[in-house]
Each structure stands twice: as C-alpha cells, then as structure tokens.
Image (tube, rainbow, N blue to C red; front, side, top):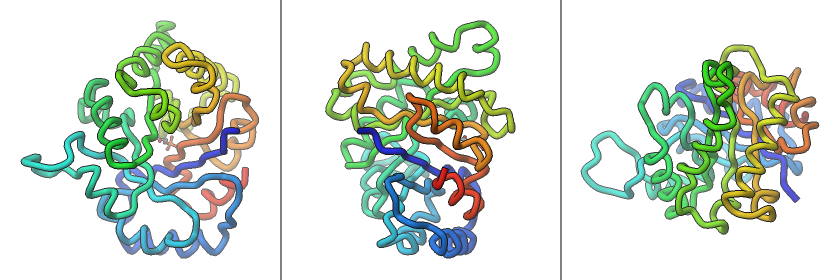
Length: 248
Ligand code: PGA
C-alpha cells in the first residue's frame, strides 16, 4: 500500500523567524493522519525547524546535498551534516538546480547514492520542458532522466525513493498540468520504473506530481491512480494553504 505523501518545497524563501512562525500556525491546525507530510526548507532553517517540528510527526526535508561526505568542497553541505540535524528527506534533481546550476543526471545519480549512504530518503525530481513537450519528446526525456539518475541503484533502495514528476512548464507558472496529463506521465513513470526494476518495486514506489499544486486542485490530482502525492512550491509557503492541501 502506498502512503499519500505531501512535501512542501520552500525553495529560497523564509528566514528563521518566518519559518518558526509558519510552524506555530501550521501545528495549530495540523492533525496527524495517514498522509506523510514533509517541509523541505533551506539549510539554514533546518535546525530551527527540527526543534519546532519535534514530536509533531511532520518530517524534515532539505532541498539539496553534496555528493561527497566530507572534504575540501567549499560552500557545500554533506549528507552526514544533514543527518545530524535530523533531516529525513532531501529533494534531489529539482529542475531549478538542473537548469540554473547545471546539475546533470550523473551528478544527480551521485547525490542519490550520497543520500542513501546517509540514511536520507530522496525525492527525485524529473520532468520535461515546454519545448520538449511540444516536440513530443516528454516520454523520452523523462525515461532518460530516470535511467541515468537511477544508474546502479538497487531495487531495495529504489523502492524508498519518491519520484516527483514536475513538468517545467507547470512550475511557478500557475499553469497546472491537467489531472489527466499528470496521471498519464505518472503512469508512464511507473511503467519505466518497472522496466528498470520490476513491477513489484514500481508498484510500491511513491510518485508525486508537482507544479502549481494548490488547495483548489489537489483533490482531483490525488484522485488519479498513479499519483500518490504532491511536491508543493508556492502554495506550501502559507500554513493554512498547506493544511488544506494535506487534508485534500
Ligand atoms: P510550484 O513549485 O508549486 O510553485 O509550482 C513546485 C516545485 O517547484 O516543486
């Protein structure tokens, strides 16, 4: 049985004071349920969030990690450092990092391995650009990302990965993929995972949709058979809106 999983991706938003204020308001309305919930915050806010969320059942997520565990890597943050702060999840391969920071699939593959080495659960983002969709290449692009990102990652680990399908044209644009478009690609992702591994593994893996998810559209998205959750950007910055999304 796959468990619904909603993760907020705060991106580069909120200082420590704002993060604490968010959690105070959020926890006033949050009730533990069968929905796994995580807040993926900037590195500097993680410690404050870890303390504020302690005992609530809400999981702590980071948005990136370096692929080596220690050494001369100025400005980077490693898996062991995140683990020490109590980080449960880490977003890996978000399209903003792929496009703005040049992260490629080989690096993303190393980051996935670094996460597992340190007991951190990856949320792996994949998705096509508008141009790629218009050229009819969305399936080739996404299956290529999966194949390279998951290279040499065994099924026992893969089954613990959350794959977030985030079409670039739907991120922060207000233009959501229709539930049918999102379902279509998430079903395709599951079949691609079955090819890389096997059907049992693929059927147990959590697949999220991400891209302009909000309280008004989460219900129809979660109704889709291959969509197990959502990675929420803008709408996850407001505590009450995130509560509404979790209570889809
Ligand atoms: P959005 O961002 O919900 O603001 O579109 C989603 C994401 O980039 O994870």
